[in-house]
Length: 430
Ligand SMILES: NC(=O)N[C@@H](CC(=O)O)C(=O)O
Ligand SMILES: [Zn+2]
Image (cartoon, rainbow, N blue to C red; front, side, top):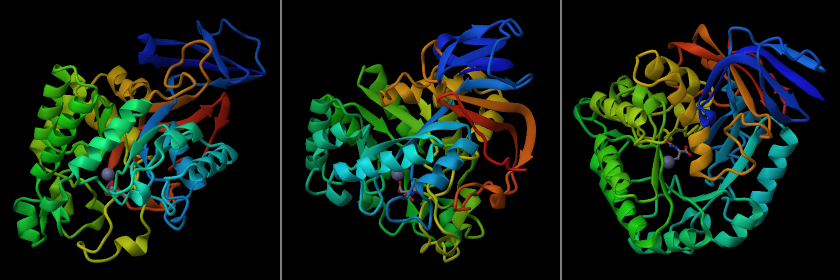
C-alpha cells in the first residue's frame, strides 16, 4: 500500500527540513520525500498543496480520565480530540480511578487505545500507590507493562524523603520523572494566582513562590540522585530562571509550557470565570513573557497541553468549588502559531520541534516517533496555516467543553492526521 501526500510544505525539525515536495508512505512507514509530481505510482494520492505537513504532534501531558471518570472524557473521545488537534501521540496521566499504579491498568489503557485507533497512547504511571504520597509503586513492573514515565502530577509529592526515593528508583530504571511543582503548604485553599486580581475577587491565592520552591527542591534532589526530571506546566518567571541555571549546570532537567500559560493572564479569572481556573494558575503578563522567552531560547523544551476535561456541571459552580483544569488538545497548535510564531517570538520550525521531536526525546518515546525520517512510522499532521477560525466550545470533540478560549479568533488549523499511514479524519471545528 503506497500513499503520497502530494505537494505540501514538508517541515521536519529533526532533519532541519523545510521544503515543498511529495511525502511517500509505504505500508505505514515513511519512505522519503521527492520533488512535487515526480512519483506517480500510488494506491492513494492525498493532495496537500498550500498546506503544512509535519510529524504528528506529541503531547506528553494529557488527562484521558479513563478508567473511572468517563463522564469527563474517555480514551476514544480524548484521542479523537487529539487527532482533531494534530496529535498522533499522547501520554496520559495516572489520576484515574483506579489510578495508573498497577500493570493491569497500564495494559487496559494501551489495549483500549489500540482498539480506538485514533492516536497512540503512552500511559504515565503513578509514583506512589493511589497517588497518596506514601508507598511507592512497583515501577519496574509498570515499565515492563508499557508505562513511559512516572508522575503523581495532580497530587504533588510533598515529602522530600519520598521524592528522593522515587527519584532513586526512576534513576535506576531510567524512567523520566514528571513533577507538578507545588508546595501545598503555600497554596492551601488557594484557587488562583496570588496578586491584585485575587484580592479584588476576594479569592485565596496561590503564590508563584509555591511553584518556585518545589522546582528548586526537585532540581536539588535531581542533582543528588541523577534522576531524569521533567518539570510539568511551568507558569512562573522565577521557575524559568531556576531551570535555566540547572541546565547551565548540565543537570538532566527539562521543562514544558502549556498554551494557556503564555496566552492568558490571571485577568481571565475576572467575573469568576471557572474556565480560567487551572493548576498551576494563570499568572501575570511578565510570567507569560518569561515563558515565551524560554520557549524561544530552548530553556523550556516542549509544549504540552495539560488537557484536563471536566464536566459542565462541575465547572458551573462557585469559583473556589470548581475543579482545576481546562481542555487543550484542539486549540494548542493554533495558540502556538498565533501567539508564538505570528508574533515573531518563535520560528515555525521551533514551534514544531517543541511539539514533535523534543517531547519524543524527553520521554524516549519508542518507535522513532516525532520525525519524518525514512523508515519511521508514518505519523503525520497536516495544517492550514492561512485558516483563521473562531474557537467554538460546542464544536470540540472532547466530551468536556471547559475552555477559556471560546470565542477567540486564532490562525492555523489542524486538518487531519495520518497514524501509521492511515488517514484519521474527524469533523472540522467549523
Ligand atoms: N492541571 C489541572 O488544573 N488539573 C489537572 C490536575 C493537576 O495537574 O492538578 C486535572 O487532572 O484536572
Ligand atoms: Zn499538574
